[in-house]
Length: 108
Image (cartoon, rainbow, N blue to C red; front, side, top):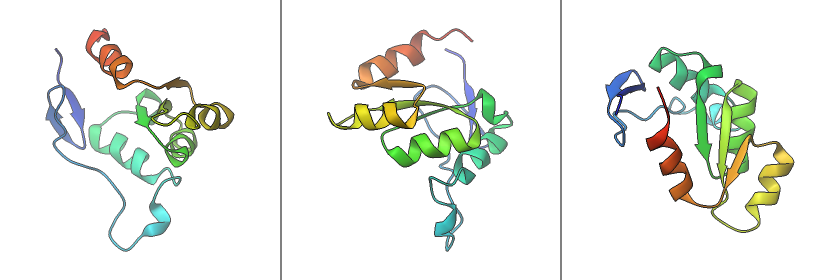
């Protein structure tokens, strides 16, 4: 499997070398603000439009769209699917298996 850049570090599949979030003391930069997604893309050296966020909250969907990224919404509770559809998630799934399979079978 091909390694990918995340958070400025080269990593293999299934390993996150660094977590990218908001600066300490800046709650205004939390999602749904797109800052964490834009920052992660910058650290990885890729355009935000080439990124996909996998999230399980409405603020994840909102932040991804505000940043210009694609979003896969994980509806880990039954009521979330409708919420994510209304918010315009690009894809909605209720199983992590589907996400894992998509990631492991994706072509570079």
